[in-house]
Image (cartoon, rainbow, N blue to C red; front, side, top):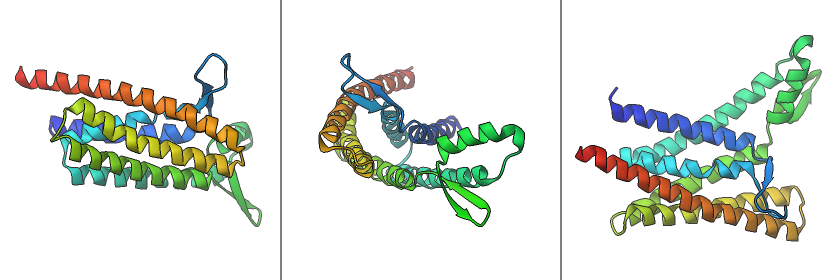
Length: 223
């Protein structure tokens, strides 16, 4: 296995880890300004890096292969949730009941009862929406980046190709979750504005990081 293959495998693994972390910290909110009015999910500080790694992958392998990676990440994420359900549904011994309850509350907080047996599973709306939005937003950034890169520099291509799908991803996610939780319309608008601030800041930061990585790569090649 050569250096390029090792880098691609590391990027794929990191993508999967980031998506799992995004799912775990979805409902942990933090304030982003002094008056404690605007709050965002902690997961949206993690999520932008998935776009960065997709673009880095795209520079290493072809469009089709990168798209296959996105599909495989979605499939692995679904398998991860199925395994969580199976493992948390296995009864624990008396000594680990507290740990078992913490895991169920954090990872698989829903259940159905079949006779005397409970089958635990994660929030299906979160799992399905996360998977679908990840697929569509990361496929869209691939398409936009591939279309822009011949006509502009990498910083602008990265910024524009990330800003559009990330905005759509966050907008859909906030609307779906707020509607499901029956949150008031005014609160939903504040949540959208809060997340839009994160989108703008994250897009700038990720674009700068991406540009630095590409400049360093060019210097290494010249050396």
